[in-house]
Length: 252
Image 1 (cartoon, helix red, strand yellow):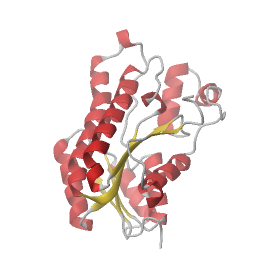
Image 2 (tube, helix red, strand yellow):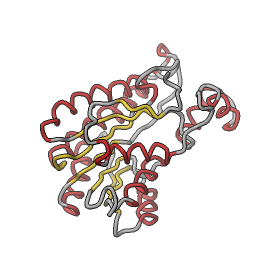
Image 3 (cartoon, rainbow, N blue to C red):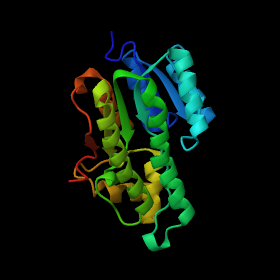
Image 4 (cartoon, rainbow, N blue to C red):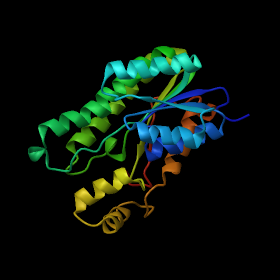
């Protein structure tokens, strides 16, 4: 039996690299997963890879309360409960000084990360089984900051406040709530940010960021997924309210 045998996981941003890497880890440990996201083709491809016997998908924009509620209800209809919530949906916004930052982009970044996390937790927590786990993807800039990242850094810090509040509110049910704080990951999301920050090619921009990381390299999405698996399983049974860095030392 796997470490997540009999467990059901609801994963937002399920079509992305970290979402899928986590879904692979979860299903390898005998969990059932529901991938939630906005790219239906990507979600369908994820389910096809994982297998329809262990995976399904729901299309849901995390900023829309009705869509989130419907996605959670579809999960309940299919599985009868939820044990693990991985709130992982995100966007990067733009890179610009605070005084030049577009108002609408700022609002959208906070909507996806803060309102989105709030809505996912609001609608899943009532049906998360006792002893379950909630993992929220923040960022290294949710513990630090960087010039030009006012919207993203603000949103990622805000997620920590949501996490700590929820950890207190759910402790009596034995539900653990933690944030993870990845540094640069080798995926398209991160490479787009790096090119915007540096104005360089993908390869040159990655080298610039590698130089800022004590380990000297980007993380593989699976390195993040392994930490999420740890937080989802019984090995982390006494960890809640934690901010877990996965940044190769970048936040030191």
